[in-house]
Amino acid sequence: MLTVRDLDVRYGRVHAVRGLSLDVPDGGLVTLVGANGAGKSSVINAISGVVRPAGGSVTYDGRDITRRPAHRLVKAGLVQVPEGRQILATLTVDENLRLAGWHSGPGRIGEVYERFRVLAERRDLPAGSLSGGEQQMLAIGRALVAGPRLVLLDEPSMGLAPRIVDEVFRVITEIRDAGTAVLLVEQNARRALAAADHGYVLAGGEVVRSGPAGELLEDEAVVRAYLG
Amino acid sequence: MQQLLNGLFVGSIYALFAIGFTLVFGILDRLNLAHPSVFAASAFIGIELVEVAGLPWWAALPAVAVVGGVLGLVVERVAFRPLKGRADAHFAGLISSIALGGMIIALLQWRYGPDTRRFPAGTFPDGQLELLGARFTILQAAILVISVVLMVALAWLVARSRLGRAMRAVAENPTAARVLGVDVDRVTATTFAISAALGAVAGALFAMNVNSAQLGMGSAIELKGLAVIIVGGMGSLPGALVGGLLLGVAEVLAVQYIGSSWRDLVAFALLFGLLILRPQGIFGSRRLREV
Image (cartoon, rainbow over all chains, first blue to last red; front, side):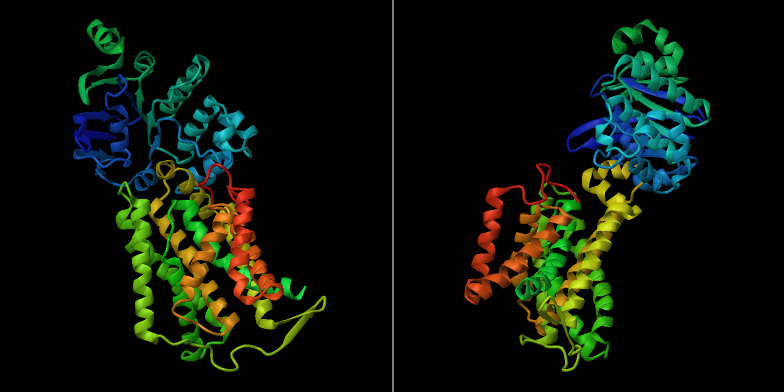
């Protein structure tokens, strides 16, 4: 579904991502883990068209999408749940969801309200009034409204209480089980690898290890060096 | 009552002009200083449409709005979009829009010369209306009604429509809007077009109200427009409406009760007074970027 080859991302003189390659198969849950500053979000942003890569290629569904703008990728079913949730705080919950249906229409909003009852109860409130966990549900709900075939999740558990983190990972697994491919970027590497099929460990902008997620989680050297 | 009504007629034009100004500021955090030139150009184009194309005055207005919208797209494309990636895009856009505004005025001078232009005799209906003892022309009533209708339509568009949701999203967080699938460049260009169309109609209405168009008319209203959006609260549409009406009424009352040479002094002193009482403007908040 998604093939990234030799991706380079630069911010001026800072070389954030160096020659990164990864694959996300149809319906797979792949995770990219690493410490803060390893370049994980840069990879997500380069794939989703928010940042222009300096080199390499991104292929989605057999088509080269390198440097294609974000709004066109959303239309094609490649949807990002950004780091920090990026909720539109002054818009209501319902307006956030309707905006997410910019290309796909509002048809899936009802399903999102059924899945996340708390959003249905607060549909007319400004999204900024939601708790952190509720905002994360809204961010994921927005992605689902767009009718994704591949969801890129950037640090979805960041800053959330452990109980809410459990809920977030349960929803991520459900999304994969429903047949949508997921690329999950996480600092909480143990949780991410436990949920994923395949994993990549990123350090200094480069992939230093990759393999089946279960194997990475049991690899003492990986755990000691990169997962703390 | 008579003076209040006169003030509302002028003030509604100020408000329409200022709303176009503040719409772009509210969404993009940019001041488009080519807006006054679009205002002036549209007055001349309105006269030409009536005089040469033979359109009735009311039919010239939608045509002027379309021309204004196209000018808005040009302003966005030429003066703002090439600079959007710069760290100093705010200041650079300000300067480039002044330059483009100057070019528009130069083109007007080349096309029409430096003289004042007027609508042909008989363009406007002669009839007068009366309300609570105050007399006004059908044209004045039409100016007020058209301004109010356009402002209400804009308020509906921003608050209720799909485009309005996208505009508010871009105002709050362009990156978040982009990852939701919104074509931020297209929303930005559309915002410029709507803003300029409102400024263009304001220009044509202003020229109709005083039956003249001059090259300097944009500069004359520019400061007033800026004052109105600051007093109303930067980026606030209701603020631009109330600020515009307040300025119009203050001007007319100053002329009536103090003297015409005191008009600007009294009007701006009142606005300064308001800002001392409420520095963030009438509808402004501590958070400045608001549509």
